[in-house]
Length: 312
Image (cartoon, rainbow, N blue to C red; front, side, top):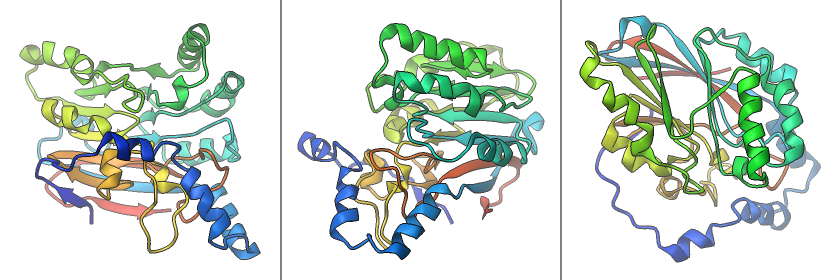
């Protein structure tokens, strides 16, 4: 069952505690060396978890779902980190396209360096969906590119069929669906009110309430998303901790909600249905442990049932 948190978030994160988390998975690197994970069996487990791509399949129910969205499937990829990714383009292509999704989205951290630009087409160029491909950016996408190469990055995404939404929104009239893209919260590029500007300016023309699908790399924009309203918020960034000892929460999640125990999976927080994707790639350390890479699929259905979930 998904966790629910319906009261306003009140816990404060001090600047000192925030910077204590900087470096993210470096703390988990300490775990690799100090807790004896060097045994062949455990390293084999880590290798398996790093390379074994899981499909998380969700059925989400909405009483007022637009008729055109009944049975439609959204596929979410996140945190590919192509700089170190060892999962093949073919594996990702087959995992995505076998489900025949109606809409494709990526929630940030695709590349980190300029050499990764040449990997975009092999990994993303063949992925298609009948209602479009949309992408928002993460902190790593901003990390090592000049302004000129960043513009080239956005153009290359467009060239291979992906629409970047940087604090912007796109309306899909055939689905009565808004795709609202929030730029990276982790690097303070998020401007949630700007991302919703087109949505609110068109409200007076709408006869039936549209579905609002919101994309963001990190959950740190949740307060403003809740204020503006969302039917589904898809995020990533945490990697689910990336390296997590069985029975324990991750040491580092690099998000405010992660500090409160919300670092992966489906939740309803402050009235917003939220999914935190554990991602496909790795950061800092080219290994995952007890947190396999995932691609998530969300099939929208009309009704009042609890979410259904299976892993394959």
